[in-house]
Image (tube, rainbow, N blue to C red; front, top):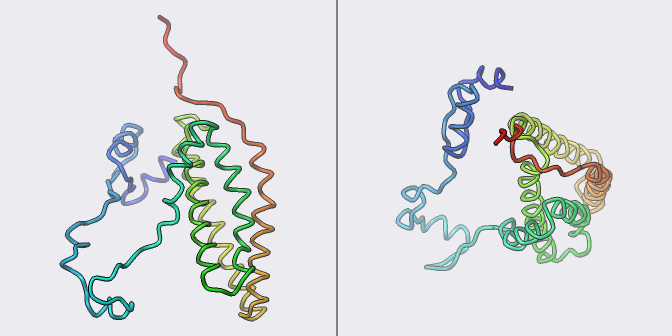
Length: 214
């Protein structure tokens, strides 16, 4: 994995700690790409009246962004502390298949919006569980490689699912029945892989090496 990364122009990381760690492991050209808001770029002085008018917002009307994944972070942290990250994964994996068909219950605009917010919240719980599992089930020296493989597999799965859904809509037509078929297929695919979670065994890996003799 190190040889693969060292062939690139740069390896981007979000924190200085990770940058230092990878550098110590022999990774070359590790660059910091901080995840922060540019307060000069995103400033009230840059407000665009024409854009706000396009959104249908007048004067100092409030404009909100979707933050569904942040809604349950405190609750998720409490659950992980009390019951472990595996519980978060089970809760997320049980809820996500059901939320895939949430919008089918009504054509009212509010219902799919509520379903999307709930899906974002559940995804936040699921992602926190995945993050914490990195420290529970993966040895420190293996984490970089495992996370790289996981990211590639996860993004490949999402891309493949999007392409498959697009193909189904193109073949069946873009009516309510076609969308229902796509979401029921998503439900079945998500439910089918839940059995894999039962195979996960937690073994806390804090140190990579045995403690030195006193």
